[in-house]
Length: 178
Image 1: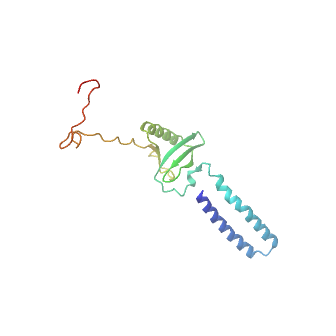
Image 2: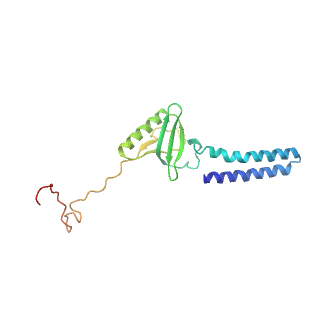
Image 3: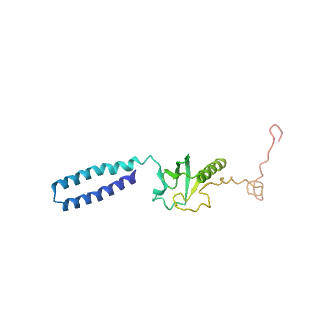
C-alpha cells in the first residue's frame, strides 16, 4: 500500500501542475471551472483505481518492478481451464497474485511440479516468471530438490569411538543384561 500512496502523490502533483498551467493560459471563466471540476473528479478516481486492484490477480505482462526476477516460489496455484492460471508468487518481498494466460502445457508442468514438490516436502518454483519469451524448451515450473539429510556420525569421528575419541554408542536390546 505504501507504494500506491507514493504513486498517487506523484500523479496528484503532476496533475496539479498541468491544471495550474491550463488555468494560467485559459482566459474563459467557464473553461477554468471545467478544468477545476475535472481535477476534483480525477483525484478520487486516481486514488481508488489502484486500491481496487489490490485484491485481484495482476497479469504477469504488467509486472515491471520484478522484471529481473530469476525464480519465484509458487505458494499456491488455481487452474481455470481455457481462461487463466492464477498463481501466488513469492520472491524477496510479500507474496503477490498473478494471472497467466491459459496454456495446457504450462498447466501440466505446474501440476507435475506441485506433485513432485509435495513428495519432496518442498515448494514448486517458477523459472523466469516475468520474462516474455517464446522459448518453451525448458519447463517454467519445477520442484525444489529434497533438502539434504543431516550427516550421520561416523565411527572414526572424534567422540564416536574413533582415534582419540570416546567409546562409541552400542545398541543393547531392551531386557538383555549389560
